[in-house]
Length: 223
Image (tube, rainbow, N blue to C red):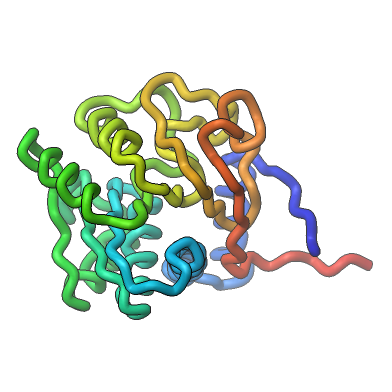
């Protein structure tokens, strides 16, 4: 078993950049690998049963990872309810592409913009077996603002097991501090390398079990 070092968000961003610029691995390929790895972890949690999963996705690439994850879960026969914090125009380019692929694959994406939308999310949470947290990624710091804090609180209050992508939403991936509401995950699927914040301060409390998904970042062979 390879033991991977914990890295800072800045180091991880540099590794992503190097994979794209030096090795020619596109950001879409990295997102695809991340989302597929997350879907495999969710499927193991479901123990192969074709149940319902709720995914809450943010506007950044973490949300894009969530869209990819949901597409792979659908291919496994899992029903997914996807709630997006923003419309397509607010998304990063890669996230927008993967949202489009997901919708063309037959999945409706519900927008969270009003109190009624949060009530709808709560109803879906009652019917699901697992939640995929794809709201905030490693670039997040500070405290979640409305309506993000309400969404995080609703997920935590549901009592459903949560799989967070890269880091639990609300946790600072560098310091491990949670300055406001924060997802309490059963499992965190972190991409490429584990992030320093998962092992420090509040990190272990919120992250749960940490799994590292290989997204095919090139690693130099030892001499």
